[in-house]
Amino acid sequence: MAILVQDAAIFAQLLQAVSDVFAVNICTAAALAWLVYDILITFDQEVALLRARLTWSKCIHIFLRYWTVVILA
Image (cartoon, rainbow, N blue to C red; front, side):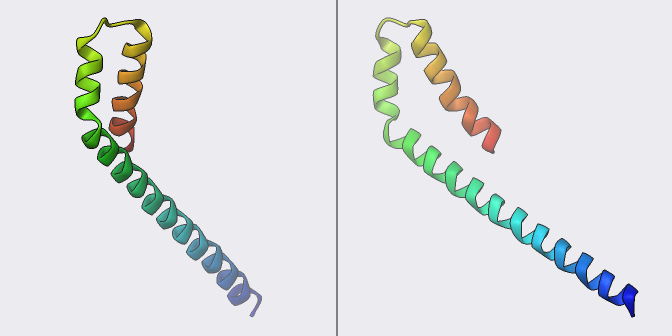
C-alpha cells in the first residue's frame, strides 16, 4: 500500500513538471511571435538606421535583436 501512495506522489510530481514545461513552451512561442511581429513592423526603421553612420552601439543593438530570435527559435 505504501508503494502505491509513493508512486501516486511521484506521478503527481511528474504531471506537474510536464504541465510547467508546457506553460514555459507556450510563453516562449508567444514571446517569439511578438518579437517577430515587432521586427516586421519596424524593419523600415532598422534599414534607415543601418544606412546612417554605423556605430558600435547600433551594431550591438542589431546583433542582440536578431540573436534573440535565433535563440528563441
